Length: 441
Image (cartoon, rainbow, N blue to C red; front, side, top):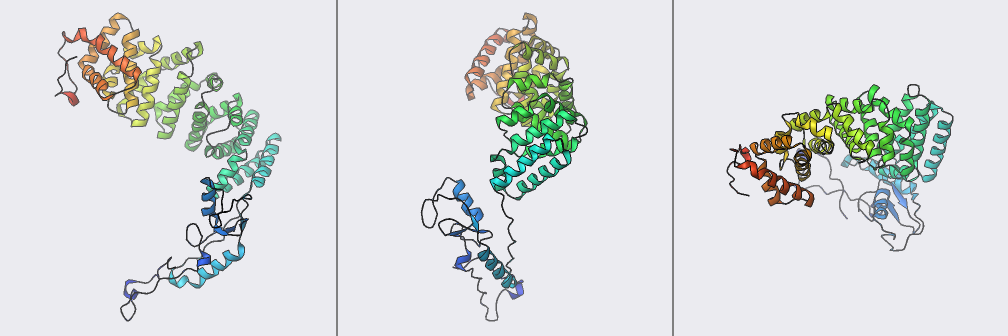
């Protein structure tokens, strides 16, 4: 077989004296992986006696195969023995042919085993029990170095219970003193970031009062990377829909004000998106009295006005999250009152219909419907008239034509019926996107 590297020569030396191109370098067949046919960088031998490149055979097994690709035998023992002799032969061959542009393959790192991870986690558990922050910090950093070496190492670390152990250690150090243990706490959050989604045991540890208070402290006092790690962990924790975590977070003093402040300041897109996601989980988690109080709390902080500002000049993903929260807050009377009091509410909501995504359209139609359906008669009339003036009637017709979910379809139909009596009294100001559209209802 012919393959691999062509000789690296400049253009003047590309041809020999006879004008014929140079021959390509031939890689010995036993240096090639039987799966990829490429030069092996980390040769390992299976129990069947066949040698493969580690990455290729691991991918083969990860895809659900249980046989040896060459012999087709069922592999009962998945241990991979490094073939050091063959690897050194390949390295020597690379050195001998470096004048042809062949680079020497580096000596691969010894991959970690489940036993290595288990032993490390036992030490993490012991150091956190003793509140030995320096030892625990070194162990967590060692785990991160392992994970940085390969995706395989990351899988082994996660599969052997690292998220639960790290979350437990985080809870222990947070319960002792956040200020004193800030270094190890920050490192644990860094490690946990690439272990999402979290297992149930890890969720319980991070959902404790001490852990949640620590993450809120990070949002107040840490630098930008620290804030991003903390809000990402909170978002991940609440995404599982555990109402206990939502209630525990809501009981921490000043958390609502802090989240609103993070959204207002727009420190970074990551923090803004995750803060909106956390708020959405908090206001949508329950229809109980606690959930109603949560919505009222954000409304009283002026968050509806903040959301309208976001909707004017933000990107698609942020607008979707803002509209989801806006719709949710309009479920309570205080929220609707706040929405009625802002002159931008109806124009902005109507503008977002059919502008961003189908999800955004659903939220916009739902918010307008709630304001008309559950508001006072006078307020309902004002909303309907204003919606007609900015072209809502035509947009709602298009929503029904292009297709939407059953819930949105019902709300759009009901809104059209509500608007119909007001049409004869108004000269509509039709949105520029639909100025040539003439259609009766």
